[in-house]
Length: 417
Image (tube, rainbow, N blue to C red):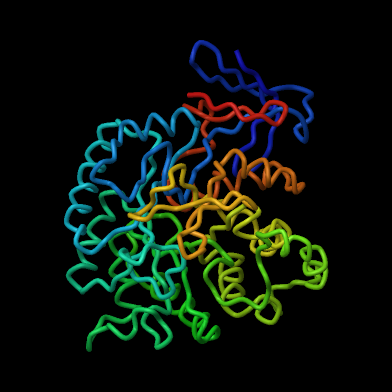
């Protein structure tokens, strides 16, 4: 039996007697309980928003993915997983078929721990760790096929807002009459697929920021069939033009880290001046998140982005407008490329030395955030509540008798249900 005297929900922390016994959760009001400290219960599971592989499964090899096996792996970790795939152009029809099977199984209740599917690309302006084979410019017909996966459970698709500008990797190959950004965003959003903004060029930072606004405005004007947030982002600070050094991954960089961070005077960062402090693109994203227009994703492994910078970004945008993403792969085989590790950190690298993915699971990243002194309620916005509000607004996390959730006892998370 498990018990807790605090219930932590998206709206408030309250005194409650929560018990897990005989595979059943029960919640009742408690008397004379300090609701500000101690063990607690949360009526939801963490949502691993951007994850590339669990166990020995590379999600991009979707033709071999056993969805029931993946669901069991996610259940064992006590998470809701949103697998994020890379997609080659010649596999588009196969992906549509895969999404049809995913939709059927989810409707039959077979996949309670796989919340949705996501794509990284294919319209990528600066692909970084994204496999080159999965970077391509879909035709109008191909965009329609991708959008058709929205009702089947494709929650988001990462798109570079500045992919159609002159500095983009894709720009030289774009045919005359290629659809503009507004058409692409509208086509996706009207079928329930959220654009996830990321992988910017470094050619013209202000133009990139302007493209962020164009994408958000197009999504806001579209006829969205859902109730959640319409636009999210890929990992903040990675693959975008910056005025700061955002990560310190080698021994040499780590030796300089404290002095560099001190020079940034993080407490002085403000929404009004952020474009001068970090650059136009991250400033546009953080401001839009603060205003509730988008949900921004941020990695908390300490190696994609320095912890101090990540924490300050959360403070500026607000934890209820941000989601922790792991960018995790448990396998070195990812999207047709074989990755390797560096002894100085926990990241996966391509053969060119480009960071391709992370390795830290979500519970490690939760511990990282807790170690920064972030309040527990804010942590659960980052790892669960914001994702539910963004992707699954129909789920009632305030119900009296939850079906599942997490006890946090002495800092250890125990998922039940």
